[in-house]
Amino acid sequence: MSVDFDAVIVGAGFGGMYMLHRLRDKGFTARVFEAGSGVGGTWYWNRYPGARCDVESVQYSYQFSPELEQEWEWTERYATQPEILRYANHVADRFDLRRDIRFETRIAAAVFDETANLWRVETDKGDKVAARFVITAMGCLSSPNTPKIPGLADFKGPTYHTGNWPHKDVDFTAKTVGVIGTGSSAIQSIPIMARQAKHLTVFQRTANYTVPAHNKPLDPEYVRQVKASYREMRQRARTKPAGIDFTINPASAIATPEEERRREFEARWTYGGLGFMASFSDLLLSDESNKTAADFVRSKIRDVVKDPTTAEALMPKNIIGCKRLCVDTGYWETFNRPNVTLVDISDEPIERVTASGLRAKGKDYRFDCLVLATGFDAMTGALLKVDIRGRGGVALKDKWSEGPKSYLGLTVVGFPNLFTITGPGSPSVLTNMLPSIEQHVDFIADCLETLRSKGVSVIEPVEEAQEAWVGQVGNAANITLRSTCSSWYVGANIPGKPRVFMPYIGGLPAYIAACETVVNNDYEGFALA
Image (cartoon, rainbow, N blue to C red; front, side, top):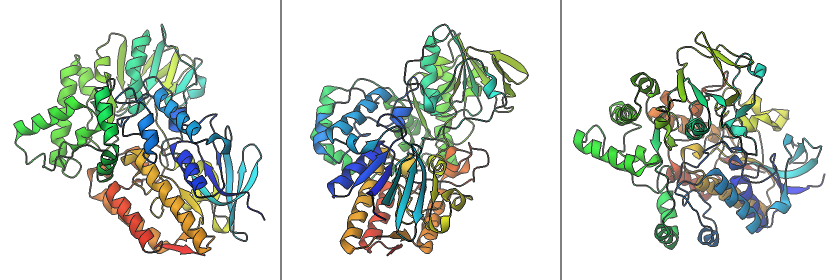
């Protein structure tokens, strides 16, 4: 059978767009299939009020094109969803990507044909194409999690999910609103919804840590300095575990005198952002050191929230950094508003949703609108929604029934010529996603070019290499405190999902070194045929 494309790419977010660009440059044919009507991936779907990146805009951006870096102008320290979406559209236009993207089209199935050594791909529109390679770029947080609360379909008012927000403004003025969840999307959206709503009731299962963004318009002089030394900034970021250029204090928190430790935390807090966790080098390695940071944040909640009972309920009890750290603008202050009520459901889940609201802890709550800020089926959710079948017709969902296993987070035994950009087993969500995406795309593009030069048509990891990598991922997770709590990193937010720490926590530099070793050893750990 003839091959329609060298590669089918699934998703037109930042991963899929750059993958298309790189393959074109190397002379490969590719077709992108995208479920949405436009590019942008997570920034196309996540349009909830206050949606904003938690990595500074000058760093959350492509670095493959110096010209793009120089011409694009970010307006805020932390870019909003509309601005990031404008950036994604600018990239699509600048590099003429849309002509090879089919929008409003989902991949229904991808089956590897062992006789022809190619993938047969079917879409929900009835398209059937053959491709030598399938490259997934569906994102780590792109499959919204709708909780199975009894009666959810009974609610008569509008229901919104932060991960699948309407593509039009939603006005909560004069409305009573119920919000379920207090993760990142809730922490960003609650302050804005509270300013609009007649009354906002927040149902919190787990209190989360959040640090202030201190967002502001970008100073033109700062932007000039960044653009004058972008290469140096990118190189420094590449040497940092999270792929973000901020300074990590090498000292131990618990070994630092209390007054000096407090000054360091205060300085990081005043600056704002995710760099707070870099206040000391052992915050995710030592329970005692971690407690100093957690206690500092809890003291901030007491300082801000006026009602002691509400303040106590808002205080996270777990380790800081164990769940994803959030970045906010006025979150805790919002609970001082007279039109905001916090309902702590940590000890007793919501009983049911009713036609006019919901019932929790023996009490009925009424509201006009319901917002589900209940997160995602992270890392594997989007992948397993597609019927992907490898050798012997084995489905990926069956292969991963006890948790995902991959080689480098990029490939899977039994699924030849399948690549997963930022898949489970890679640094992905624990890093700045843009440089992690680019590193994966560059690896894949160079790999395909090498295969072509060798006259090789099939690449697949070997079992021993995959098991060794899975062991490395597990060992790295076990030495940190990050794997010690129930978070979406381990799939704990999805009932029945295997509990496996999915991302590689060893840091971006160590991961890049591992990939480079594989390549330098002639794709060690892979079978080429």
